Length: 509
Image (cartoon, rainbow, N blue to C red; front, side):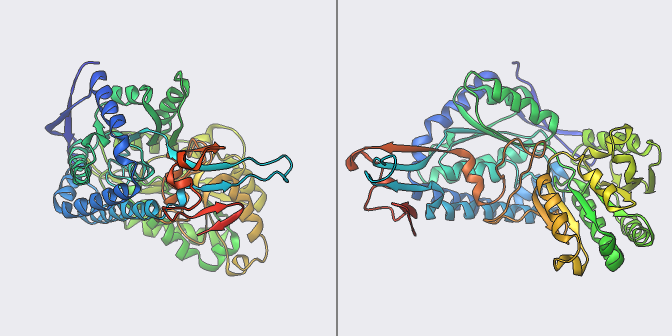
């Protein structure tokens, strides 16, 4: 694999600015993975781990001005959005530090021998241990929260796993700067800088997932790219877990009663959600099932007015812009598809938001309109107008897995009357997060969060946001009949580390 320059590109003009780094060779990928593997022992102490995560958050926050300036130059996401995203990233690092200190993620379970059980129970002690080196593939649309210092990296380090990150080509300079900050934080706690590796280049990403010392991978990106890496991870001589977030349509169902009750508010809310961040969120609502008739007409008019007031914006790179314009044009040319607000080029380097409408019956069976059931990355949504509940249900039955599914109900339906409970049950198999009377954009970092869903939303049942994201990088191990002196402190009867655990069937906190 020949080395090639990595350039910083201005998304506002598409012009190269400066050489940032060099694409990693196979030998350099190997060196980064081996350095990370050698750093595993330094993460064994949970106290050191949590302190490292907090220091990383502090130092990222201290470098805010420089990081936001570089991030905006490479992504055009704007200082306000990027400052908020960096704050979220720092909060996430500190949240995982708290999880490490608490220790519940270790899932300690101890069973003393019981000869009266059928069959008899021997002395068994179970907990979870880190997998090893984790490969992380950065996303383009969140240069902090889903990139070098993001949730995959934070949760892997919290689990005790060193990380090698494949930088995203849309923000290479920022990736280098953030890596420096994280390595500096590691060094403050005696952790080798190799605990956080960084490589650039497409081929480097392929080499990374194939490396025999890499034990798991986290990915956020396209269906095509993620599926290729997922297949490579499964085809290894020793397959590894591949936790990929690939794509999502994030359907929204609006009942006739809800539209009759508050059509204007729903239309305005939808406009805000689908255009947020120039439509570059993985949870953007891409398909909306709205009723035909007067209430639905009011909703569409409200959406038209609100979307028409949204300014054109810059996408993350010109490749995405080209794909968006081509995707809009291809969808708009389909029979019976109308464009109340036409999405397209807003200027030489920008795009304008818009939406399409189509009779829901066109989507109820396989046909040429199936393209409308695929994600179009950018500020576009499709409003499918249904004639009755059965038609809406037929469309829902054809959808693949999603990160989110949303239903808007009337006050009575939300109180449990009518079809409210039934609709919630119908949406549950479609997504990992089901919303009622809200909008999916915005993924809170919280213990109960689940950011994942059935394929192709993700390639596993895990979450990439929230405290349980740490579970992806751990494996359980049980010791049977091991003398107390040989056991790790986490599994000893006297519980010297004060961990929450289940001891002979009793939950101890």
